[in-house]
Image 1: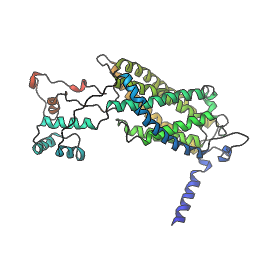
Image 2 (image 1 turned 90 degrees about the horizontal axis):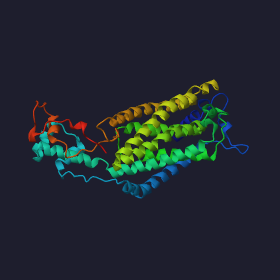
Image 3 (image 1 turned 90 degrees about the vertical axis):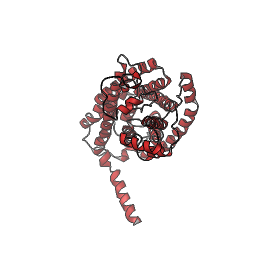
Image 4 (image 1 turned 60 degrees about the horizontal axis):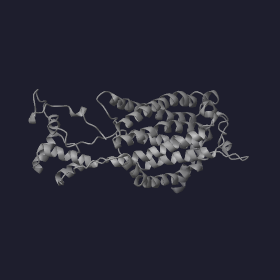
Length: 391
């Protein structure tokens, strides 16, 4: 049985590393062996990204407990004091097992079991949901960590590519392919970027959950596969350009979040305008019409198409679909700049509910509409959804 498994793994490995899958023409792995003092990318190099990812997780913990807290204090990040839901075993059991948002019929049933009024039950569930949400300081620390990395990565990537010809003429990324010698700057740029994205994937369970959680997972996995694959088959020049384009806007978004959590609304809005412009230019113009064009159209004028060519570009198309998805969110956020809005909200964030919200309207939404006229306490019915602010 073990010998059969060994043979199957051997055949699978032989098929996976077949040169005809990953290289055009008569080129193969032998062309990437070090010789004459020249060094080439090797698959075995990728093992170093595991300790790098672990190091990033440790450094992040230290950063968030020291520098991030100091930055939060300097910017005046203030955490709201949340009113905790009173202990109630019946409601707690329903919250954990059945639903966090009970329906009207279920509220009536819970009221009979607990002796609470509908308003008290709604308020209990609202406070309990808020306890599940990350606080503002946690969001700030996460944003400041990513801001620091993306900014340093962009500066380092720009320094590594500023004197390279393929930064200005992208066809140069294929000159001499696949015998593209590996530079120390390219090696560390790749290993650090890949290690960072692996650390994000490892920490995704503890990070702030947003509405695009699934898309973030797809993005992290696609990025890790793309970086790893481009390294193995020596697409390193294209890979460095792709990483630089992505780093160009990410640090701006994280800095806008930081100012948002700190309550610096004008600074947040101005930075977001710059971020939106850079994102549109880099992700919807440069990436598809320059880089993707150069990886999809130009190579077939030099080599016949092969599996690696389709696989690499397939991953790039996945990233481009995610770019379009996020561009829609960015445009939705841009609407917040219209008169009467004074803050940019992260459309992916889960807003925190407050006890100041009109309980009568919450109940009203579960019942038949009320005719024109004042409600209790003499206040007219308002659609509070248009006035809520998120962190």
